[in-house]
Image (cartoon, rainbow, N blue to C red; front, side, top):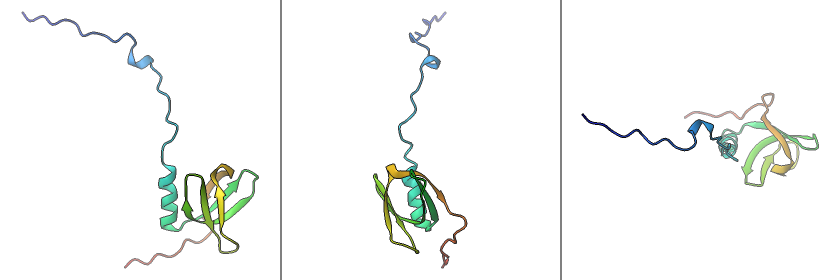
Amino acid sequence: MNLKPPLARATAPAESKKVKPQEQTFEEPKYLKKLIECGTPVRVKLVNNEIVAGRVEFYDSDFIRITREDGPNLFIFKHDIKYLFEDESAQSPRKDIK
């Protein structure tokens, strides 16, 4: 007869431990890169409720650069951005497939 000792149980069950959510998901750089590559028109709502329209041409950890056709290009600090969304009312640039 082969008797094995019972498995040792941890002092605290795993289900009682709470996992703290991550600080960052690292999805923001991927999304901004996609907006740049596709030339997607966007609208940026600032914390002062002003809305800026254009295309994201560059991003950094601190700011994004918005290129506009009807005005000067803007560098906007990320802490001044309330949210950013794709502008479906503006036409996307035509991409020729070769």
